[in-house]
Image 1 (cartoon, rainbow, N blue to C red):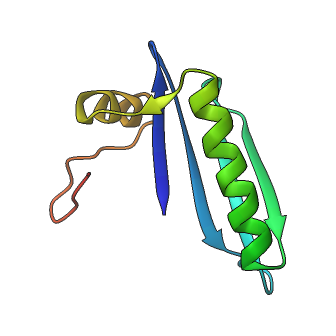
Image 2: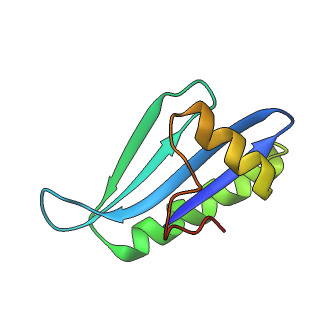
Length: 90
């Protein structure tokens, strides 16, 4: 699952996924500068706690959910099209 956020003209996103290399989960965070930070968790509970902390911190720092126009713009800057056949961007 991927969440997109904006603050002014800055955009970031974070993703929660299963680890490819073994048991557990990963939380990936792409900064407005394009830096990707990945955190790993062995338990769903640890991931859920960090996820809640991250969401609260983003809101405190003035970040909010990205609207559709902002999402399309952010994807284009990263070289990803949100308008593919059969794909839906929500």
